[in-house]
Image 1 (cartoon, one colour):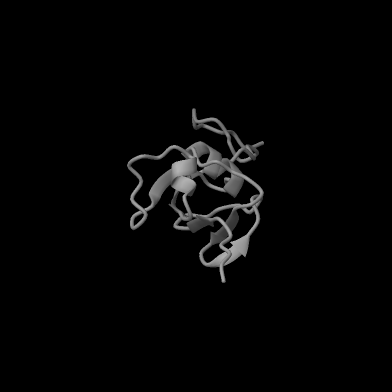
Image 2 (image 1 turned 135 degrees about the vertical axis):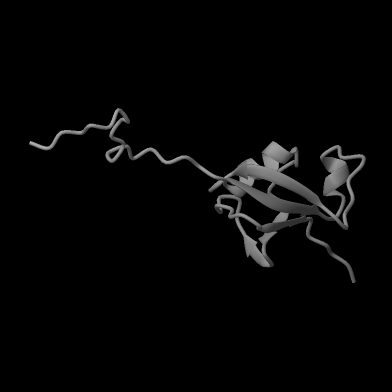
Length: 102
């Protein structure tokens, strides 16, 4: 019978994974910054958010203090998406109100 001479615990069966931290950029358009109460928001830079890997868009926005509502349209890396999408490191999130005009 093999003997484990190491004093280290055997973690081969430990399925628990440590989540990495990701950074996403959030840009707000159409007055969403004002609606969310941001007085110093720079629309050219947006805001960076450090979050756990796999965070859903809705949670990331709430964590950043952005008001989430049904009228807002969301894009991740240029593609329209829903609030339940999981984000990855480096994702660019755009939040905008639908515009109408004529």
